[in-house]
Image (cartoon, rainbow, N blue to C red; front, top):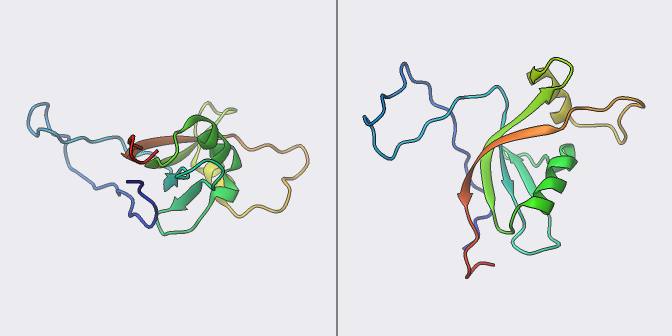
Length: 135
C-alpha cells in the first residue's frame, strides 16, 4: 500500500517535562525546531511528481526545487515523510527562520541576480515505507 495525500501531519504538543527513560514504553519525542511543518510524498512510480505539502494543505514543491530533486534522486518511490523544513544560514552558522521564510515565500520567476538562498534542511519521520507488493 502506498500512502498518498491527504494525510494530516503530526503536530507538536507542549509538555512541561520530558518523561524519564523507562517511564513510557514505545513513546518517542523530539525537539521542536523553528521551521515549517511539511509532508513530502515521493511518487508511487518513476517519472511522476514529488509532492511537498504544508500542514494546511498548500502544495509548495515549486518553492523547494532542490529538495524535490534530492527526493527524486535519493528516496524510494511511494515514501511519505512528515517533518520540519529548516534552513541553515551559512553566514551565521545556525538555523534561520528568516531564511526559511524567504525560501517559502512565493518566488518570482527568477531569483534576483547574484542572490542565492541556502538550501533547505529537513528533519523528518517516515510514515509510509514501500513494501515488495507496493514497488
